[in-house]
Image (cartoon, rainbow, N blue to C red; front, side, top):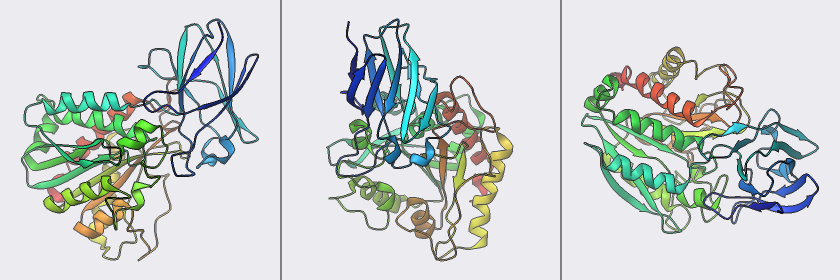
Length: 372
């Protein structure tokens, strides 16, 4: 039986260059109308009993090639459990090996979160008591931008994820957050629902997610550079979400992402916005300190460089919402690698730990929301 490489499915991305013996040469396709690429997701059939080495030949020109050192590919035979595969990066080529004891296996940059799973999540959560669903708008490909609202409190909390579709850990986090918030036996969740109204957009970029993009929508646009002036032609996803935020106001916002290079979970804030005050900023810093104290899955030592006074990029959602609403806004970044302060040698940073971090984020917010 010959080896088959296939990525013609939801979130799939790879092109086969050559198979020579036990070596498979591949390239990642760039996002449509964009030069961004790094996300890959494909399956291999017909290799049972063999050990293959896969080489991604164009890895050195990927969007964040500096993130490859220390990275390890995910592999699964059941699409439920994604383990780490031995991986190397040298001379611009990412290589990884796998010994096949099954007829078929899947490989991915991170554990995928398909649009079919997204639909299942929306169906499950929309049926929960106290949850309201509305479609804020549609994408360029005609997919829905789903928003789930729950809680009765006066504080307006917005959680939104996956502006960059290849950062699939963001929707795993969202699944964990929704499961906690809808758990009738969870004391902290009940307190949060009494004190705040949650507006949750689990996937801001369905088109890029389905197409297997790393960073952009169907028009090749990076949605997290559109928040100052979104348009129906370029960024209808941002436009409909920002319009909904204008209707409710925003007291607290978390934009959930993944980072290619830093092997840790961290927050990025809104330093440098024109209306910055130390009082507003201290609420953001206090939340980060409290989260680090609450869980070993978060730290405050590593992260991005802060913007200088008056130099914040207002096209990015966290800066725009902090400036527009006076919100305590932040970007949560999770790794494609592992959370080095508390590593997992078998799974790395994983869907289960994304969900556990979501629980910790909400537990921290429960002790924080009164001060917003």
